[in-house]
Image (cartoon, rainbow, N blue to C red; front, side, top):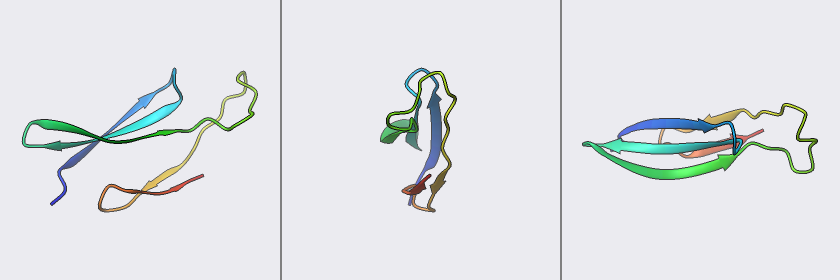
Length: 61
């Protein structure tokens, strides 16, 4: 069974990291960058991330 999931946003790297918490241990699952390739760095960009019940990323828009 899947443990609790923790989502950490890193605004400097423009990324979201996902960790699974199981019985006091922290396992890194995935990191997704939400910058837009070729975008002007002065323009704020963002993303919507949909996460499935098993903790997998379904979509990144």
